[in-house]
Length: 151
Image (cartoon, rainbow, N blue to C red; front, side, top):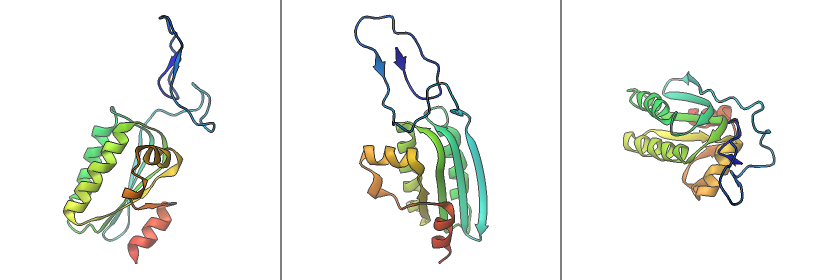
């Protein structure tokens, strides 16, 4: 059986040889149960110069273009000082999520805008696997990140 990611239906393996199963954490829900695939986005301006972009659901090659455009639009705001990227509600993140984070970081640095990332369990694990955990300024919650951005 081939399983590409949580939330997708299982596909029977018809070839010879062992089954291929995607890596999963013990805390991942069983396949096909309770994994919302929809992308959820919210943008808040908790204080002048601070924007919080909340992303939930799945970040993969299909959703990255929409996310990149949304974040690009926020980064072009004239009086922006800090972007808080809240990824704590992300349920799946492919390597496209890493590419998105690196792109956002480059654009923020180019504009002189601070970037704080609220990783959550899924994204934190991806950054550790990719060896990029130290590259980003990560916080445990959006409230903590906003508080830091205000000071």
